[in-house]
Amino acid sequence: MDAHIKDLFTGEMADEGAARFGVHPKELSFIGGFQNFIYSYAREGSQYILRFTPSTLRSLEALKGELEWIRYLAQNGLSVSEPVSSSQGIDVESIQEETITFYVTSFKYASGRKIGYPECLGNPRLYEQCGRLTGRLHELAKPYKPSHRRHSWERNEYLLRARDYLPHEDEPVLFALEALKKHLASLSISSDNFGLIHGDINVGNFTMDDAGKLTLFDFDECQYSWYVEDIAIQLYYVLYVFGEDSKPERKVQYDLFMEHFQRGYEENARRLPDKWKEQLPLFLRLREIIVLVGMNRSWDLRQPDDWTRDFLRDSRMRITNGLSLIDDFL
Image (cartoon, rainbow, N blue to C red):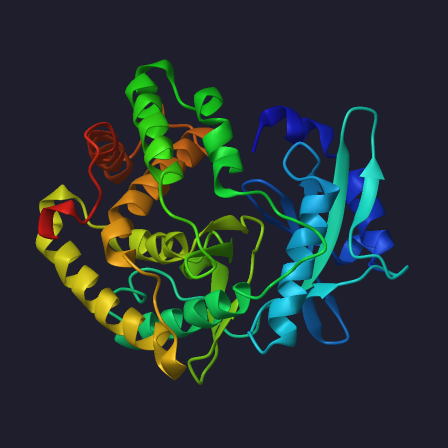
C-alpha cells in the first residue's frame, strides 16, 4: 500500500466506519491488507470483515459493482462471502476527508479453513473443487447484466501503475508488458470466453469446509477479462513456488492440476473456453508481471531472502524473454 495512503488513514476513521455498521471500535481487530485496510469483528457468535478502501483505488461505482456481483453469485448458489449492509441499510458507506474518501464495506467471514502451502500442492481433490467453483462462476457470468459496471482488464491497477512501482532497472519489464497488452488486445471476445471474473482466485482467497466445499471471498480484483485469466491465476500460484532448479516438480503439478481442474470445470456439461490451453501462457505471463509489480509495490526488496532473490531473478528472465512458467513442457 502507498505510504501516503497509510498516513491519511487514521484511527478516528476506523472508529467512524465501525460505528456506521453498528460495531464498537474495541471490537475491531486489524488484519492487514495490501490495498485496503481490513478488520474483523464478531456479532452474535459470527465473524465478519470490515474493509476500508481508498478512493484512489476504487470508485464508488466500482465498489457497488463488486457487491452486486457477489450478491448475484450468492443468489445463484455459489458459496461466497456475502456483503453486509450498514445500520442504515447502505452497502457502501463513505468517510470523506479533505483529500481522499475511504469507502467502508462489510462481509460475512468465509466458513471453513484456509489451505496454505504445501498442503495445496499435489492435491487433486482441491484442484477439482477449484475447477468446479470456477466453472460455475463463469457459467453465471455469461448471462449477467449488472447495474453497476466494473473495470476491464487493461484498467487493472497493477498494469496502469507498473511504471510507478517498478525500479528503473526493470524498464525491459515495461517493454514486455506493452507488447503483451497489444497481443491480448488482439484476442477474440465473445460471450463464451469473456466476462466478469473474480480476478484473483488463489489459496489465500478461499476456504474449505470439512466436506471439501470451497467458499470464495475477496472480489476486490473482479474485472472484465477472458475467462482463461481466472484459470491461469490459479495455475500460476500452484507453480510459482517451484524454482528453475525444480522444473520436474513444476511439470508434475501442472499435469495434476490440469487433469483435475478440467474434470471439475466440465461437470454438468460446462465447456471450457475455446483455445484456453493455447492462451494459458499469455495469462501466466500477465500474472507474473502483476506479481512482480505487486512485490515492488508492497515489499522492501533491497535485501531479499534467498527464495525471493532467486524468484525475482527467474521472473525477470521469463518476462523479458516472453516466457511463461509452462513453456518448457508444453
